Image 1 (tube, rainbow, N blue to C red):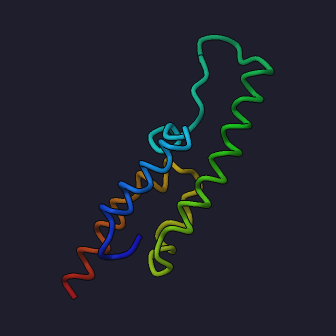
Image 2 (cartoon, helix red, strand yellow):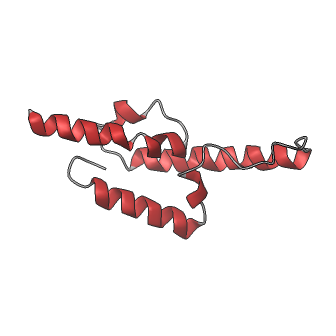
Amino acid sequence: MGSSNYLAWASSVELWYKGQGVQDHLPNNTSVVNEKTKPSDEDAKAKAQWEKVDAQLCSLLWRSIDSKLMPLFRPFQTCYSVWEKHVLYTLMTYLDSMM
């Protein structure tokens, strides 16, 4: 992602995640576990696995972002947080165009 290709980047990311069957990592901050029941060992393992995959996917997202923008995105360490913070990117692009 750079200053001129946000829409193409976002579409590409969504399509790639969907193709890998991990599109739930973009709109969800954590794996979905029934919170009304006591979490089982299986739930804990599933959550840990989801978080491991999310960290790997987040790393891929970071590598697709222009190095000039990385200071904005580096603090966000889940796919969801990087994806939701694209507003920062939009703001930076707008500010760059004003200068």
